[in-house]
Length: 145
Image (cartoon, rainbow, N blue to C red; front, side, top):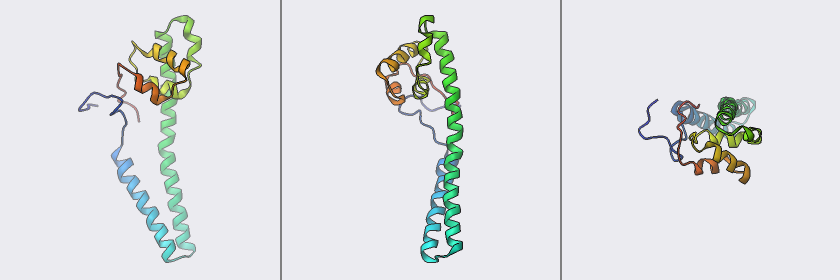
């Protein structure tokens, strides 16, 4: 997957146009139309269409969050394995003190700085965003969902 510029903190967010823009716009428009229909033609049928429209919105949100959660679990495993291979043996027990949010933030750190950032994350209780802001040697992740 080629990018016009190298991945960084400023451009690492990813949008999937068919999902985020096309499907999102259709779902919002459908919900608005259903609300307008209930206001204009109140009745069982219009209310049922509104309920179905709300159900579709929930479905679309869940369809996005489930693979992201699985992806975060895989990243957690990958980063623990990477830290075990890069950190001194005496620090391995500390790896399991890092929470999922911290491990996901560390995935963008280069091998030369990930152990130091992990120690800093534990000492200062850094969030995912704070970790990413401190990365000096950005390691692109072009395979995420």
